[in-house]
Image 1 (cartoon, rainbow, N blue to C red):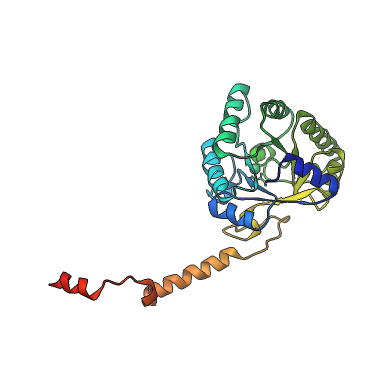
Image 2 (tube, rainbow, N blue to C red):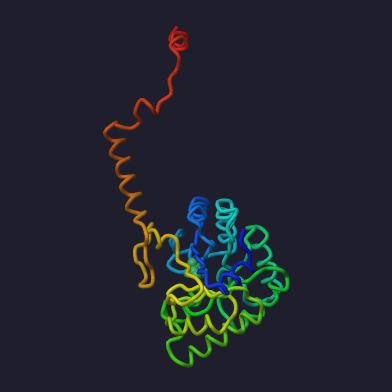
Length: 275
Ligand code: KIV
Ligand code: NA
């Protein structure tokens, strides 16, 4: 099992980090078998597997439920679980209790938190408590309502300066890793050089220390609209639809089940049955 130090070393040695979301037993198992360095139980699960139109409806219970399933599927892969919408704002004692619950119940190696500013206080507290924290800057889907949608962030010099400062503040607060979402590649490169913790990009160009994508986008499974920054590597949805369509046909035609799928009662038992 890799650990936080492994990723720091990978950054130093220039070995790229491959990260993918997964939300249940089979997806986590397949991600682990494919050699993923990190599996993220992202709150994107709200949109990807629960069918919500944003991540704000995702609850702590949802994260624990899916986190546990992913853990069972990938016992040997570094697992990160998102703290969901509004679960780490306001009362700090409640935040700590919530973080400890998610961390202990899922058995994850780390938690991820969107944002800087007051969130860096949470990062400091969790880190001191012994919970490794992944910071998340740039586009913060949990605040899409405030931002007015899912937009590229850090495009102006001022916004870029603020993001670089935020990244340094996250590192200073103890975050061992940083996710950058949907920012210009030049800024992502700058941030990656400005901090010594590994930086993982999504929609942030190729010059970060690693990449993260959403599982269902990566294999095109039930995701209709792919963002510009995604490359999909398989047509899982089509493969499944074709397979399921063939099953329907076979049931209708009687081609399934065949002889090899059925169970047989012995002749003597049959005779007793019919007298
Ligand atoms: O929830 C998620 O999938 C994420 C990644 C996009 C980084 O936070
Ligand atoms: Na997320």
